[in-house]
Length: 246
Image (cartoon, rainbow, N blue to C red; front, top):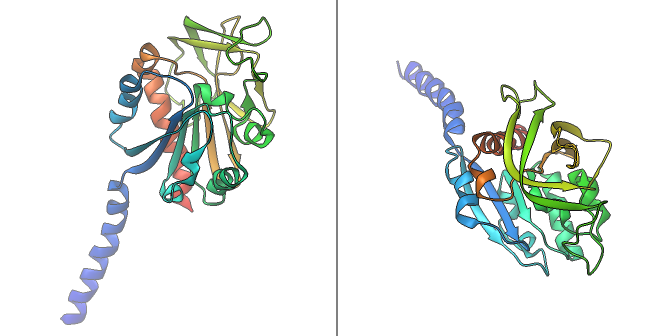
């Protein structure tokens, strides 16, 4: 009788483990700084996501000190919405250590501009918006940006977990042109806008981690777009699943 009771307790405990794991939220570190943004509207994108628990690490343009956090490697996902110019060698090492742990990375909008003098960052995230020293924000025919554009978004990867079931849509947002995209990325979304660079979003793998870049997401109108919110939430979930599998 005692053996049977012990067995039943063991089975109940084992059955409870997946449920407990399923109830836990994805731990997200959102790194901001180096570029102005509408904080309340931006963070509402994440507050409205019941699947995550997030912490904001704000840093300046001068240094990437968010990577000096003692709890850096405790997160499932790091979201970049920052645009710092400089990063020290120790900070680079901490950033790269994310991928040995399988921590997911979601790179948003202007984070494509960060670390102009660190080629490895471009390789890792899959692209670069180039700027010359002392010419930040300069718009030319070759490289530039434009606010307040109605951007037609076309779903490229129709069967990918991030984009599956999402139809083509239009979003009021900022466009970039002249940015570089590496050949080893998998495009998720693009646009038919003639002035915009393409694609608008992609994925790639880095060591044990998954990476997503989304060019969308400049201001409140974009943040409020339900399809933008869906893309961000699914990106976090998809890169976090790689972490959970390790």
